[in-house]
Image (tube, one colour):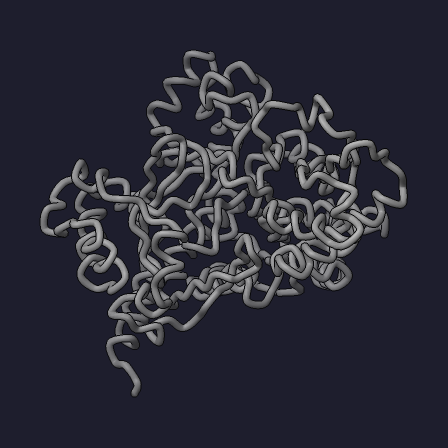
Length: 502
């Protein structure tokens, strides 16, 4: 039976989106008291979502007792293991009605078993605001004819379809924005760029960082005149260095990386959680040049992804170094532990910290542009804490590689220990490195390396649909190195083994 309430919800949300200027919406969000937003979300979810109602009951929690932000901070965390995987999909949705969602995305799990993420049109509209921030603040797409080329994988995976929908909503709002969706078909991307690019004032490529670099480099080799298209990049999926950004900017002819790039902190679980802004990029580029400042700020010598977020849309907390977030979605999430490590920094605290290092990003940016400076808090993300690595936007799990080493013949050559990491070659192209520990008394040779690499690749493609669909075929083969048992660098004896390195 057709739902008039569903229809009314869609009409109201779309009307509000179309009629509310970005400036007004974000300013309104800055003035809202976050506590009331979060508590209202909690009580709504506790009342309407069967799975969360059951979760609270199992924990002996009366929802009526949660009356302040302090109370909220004491609520138990939810995870895939303790919540999402033990309840029927419908029960994770409001009123137990899966049919109230109009789209389902898929993410690969560590065993190859997918997780399904339903959402409705209205869920996408709040994420479209993150895209609008980028297209308005960074790319000035409100007054430039823009061709957006979606290079994320299309299909059931979240990136391509979600991005395409959000960009279309911006066009509906009046942005002179036209969309084309070649997905991760490199030949088709280069064809549409060359045939359509000169009809527009600028061209935006949206995709995973290593794939976009591959597209750009392939285009250069084929004589594509990137400079004439005024190219901007929207990225998601993984951390990259500022050296990488500078290199890509140079190849595109970009004069101002702070305004020509934007990375999304996105996830299948809840869409876009935060986004790079000209301000966050300006700060990150300063920190890349001052590693002592970066270490003082982040507590580590590696540089995380740094984005700004709207707490009204996605409310972040940090517990024991893990990022938690709460937000409304097809599956509403309350204090969800996504297993990302990182932290949050208020806008004022960030500027105060930088002032101690004699850096004023506001002054730096205002010499270029007046857009892109908004007093939203920052969240920084090092990546998954559960031993995954991100490669072309695909989360790769040690369990996937383990199966490759457990095949007949190979299992007699190896101990089962390995170290997986994503590395860059001299030209900043990424590759998947797997260093494997040999069984006692065995030596490395090319035949073993080739056999092991092929076995790992076969199992990765079989078990991990993100890997199979996100990573271009020419980048899928892992580079395998074989080390003697007890190798002091990779497999020191008596030390707890870690299967991944960042």
